Image (tube, rainbow, N blue to C red; front, side, top):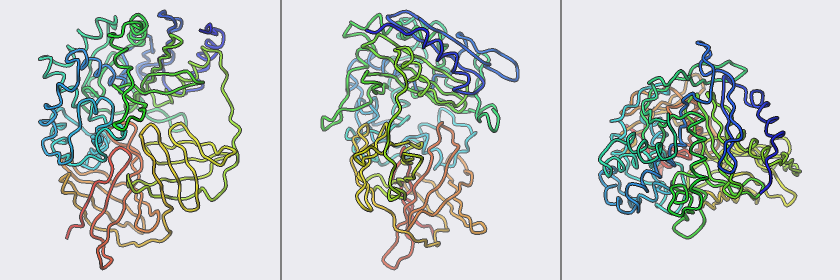
Length: 519
């Protein structure tokens, strides 16, 4: 194992306030079971001048998911013991019901319930109460792929797990976390803070950036299992030290969480039991990120190096990129600069991938490509062999088709260029029988907008942009969850006479929701 480059690590840490500009943050590094660095900077609350410290409780957001899976394994052992109990949480599901293990591995095929809040008319700063969860799950009838066959991030998987755990344990999830995990790991101040509207110990999350300024983010939603834990940097470093202490115990909680979870066809998966897998310089890592409006977090663990990094911000900076840079600095590995080939202009355009019903947008950016398919843009490098490669996808161009491979999702597909042309008869009201919700599309002076109505209210107007023949893009940049779903693809469906009969609406988190033309 290489020695830690303390000088490089200290230099990196000192650069973080400029590298990730924002109100404040914390970073910690553990090596061989000992904390070798812990640092806090900035302010937990700018208005009240509360400094950020290593003891400040910060929402760890989706990093919560591994604790939920750890609690499940500790309470019941084999997740299959709870498979039958899933029926009451998905009472109207018509497609094959997933297994509990599919929930743990984000292989359930269930549409993400936070994305669906947009379609149910929720406002970004609205209230989502605990009871709203059951009302939303009761409306789920379809999965967007067969359980076990692919990967799609779904917070709802872990929300259901939390209810299963509470039923099996006979006590609230907060007590399970505290008794079975926090106490064992020495996470002395970590808590389950499900109601994001309730204040913690002085920390405020901020939206915005250096250009427009930083404004307090409003969160008024209830989390349980998918997020909700708040912990200090000291708590999170205690978790990393606990992982190291139990590293050689095959029955240790992190050892069990880290067991690879393949897809049904045997293909390796990059996600399992609330842990994402990646590699940096051929070093295998496990970890997870977290995002709530106004907060970002990331933890990385390199088992082979007995090295862990934790980064948490009370703003929306790049916690993953920062954690990776800190890890590489600790190992004395400089940033690599790729030598890309300049992409040909034929890459640029809009493509439709039929199995997901989603739009793939490609544009040249410097010597690479910017693609938009999932929740956020991704930069790809076009190598000398003409293949575009990025962190999560590989693209091969063949005329008007793009061969797309996303290994982490077990997705291999062909996207076809969308023909040019605009038929502007899309205005009207559309109803989703499955969601018991509607979409109203209007033209306002030549600009197009759409608004969703459902059991959560009457949603805001979202801009809609034409893409090509009967394909439109609805832009959603703010929602109850963070990050927002991004672009929704709208694919028009016509009858034999060429009249619009309905639409399919979807994003990466919630695909192919069918709407019929009303009236």
